[in-house]
Amino acid sequence: MKIIQMLPTIAYGDAVGNDCAAIYKILKDDGWDTAIYAENIDYRLPKGFAHRVSDMPSLSANDILIYHLSTGTELNKRLKDYPCRKVIFYHNITPPDFFKLYDPISFELCRSGLAQARAIAPHAEYCIADSEFNRQDLIRMGYRCPIDVAPILIPFEDYDKEPDADTMRQYSDGKINILFTGRIAPNKRHEDLIRAFAALHRDEPNSRLILAGSYQDGDRYAKRLKRYVRELELEESVVFTGHISFASILALYRTASVFWCMSDHEGFCVPLVEAMYFDIPIVAAASTAIPWTLGGSGVLLDEKNPELTAAVTRELMSDEVLRKKVVEGQRARLADFGYDRTADLIRRYLRRVIEGRVAEETAVDMAEGDAGVYAPEGSGI
Image (cartoon, rainbow, N blue to C red; front, side, top):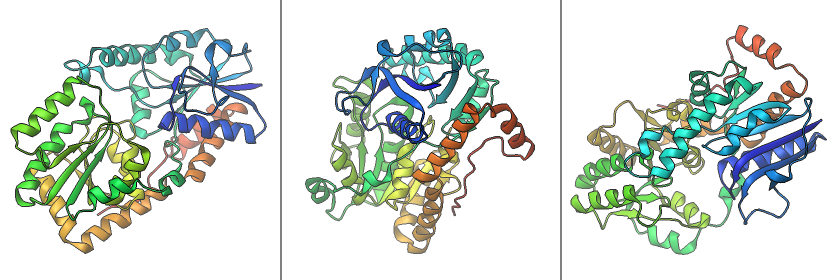
């Protein structure tokens, strides 16, 4: 039996790539004939880590194809033609309307991706979603196969590497650093971050908003955000980092006072877990996967009210007891995302598939009220 992973693009250091690497190790350690195949392979990855889809061997009815679904691609259309068992790892596809006014390419990729995801549903034997929100997303798209939840595998040892010294010096200047990390994209709602920061900065002029994320030259959404910052006369206090090194990102986490997230759509949101790791108190809007990922930790806001966000942030900065309580809750939730724990969970799920026990064990989970959900254990305020 061959157990093959396949995906459109595998990139260096991203969440899907980390999942692929971890699953490969699990399967290899357990003695299975396994490999990773992609249409596009990041040149920074070690040679031989992944292979071209065109070089994939023939598959039989007894083989298992693990497919990472996250965007629109011709590969989605071809999935049904492989004569083997199919397991979907679902990482979410952003609703296309977020990109309609800004990015026609992303709009089309997301539009086609969602249509293709729905078409794949009858061909999937089993799915693993990396959040409960994503599990429900699959159900909404017509998936009737068993679906379990396992969070994204995060290699936390990477965060213990040396931060960039220049970035550390730049942002260790006594200012209150409000941080958000994530590419500049309309679903992330950076304008809501800027609006809340304007309310905070009015009473805390020593504050700074750092928007750490990449964007392309000429990006319409980024241009709109920068124009908004100018209109609010906040150019000296709002930083757009653009693409920066991982060492610089580590420095930003180490110098951050509070982490904000006002996104309107997240399938998991790895930066929330990163903020937990660095003991940065989180203030976030209760949207899509964010409540599940926080799991009762951080400060979750039911409405995106700039004044409320600013007030909560001031409390976290001034009330040491409150700050400590929030951080302790985040540490408890962080334990749920431990690498070994998540890897063991995925190993258990994959054994269900390999041994043909998916339907049987999912039925037991349903009877016991679990339904395959990776339940949060952390607690917040």
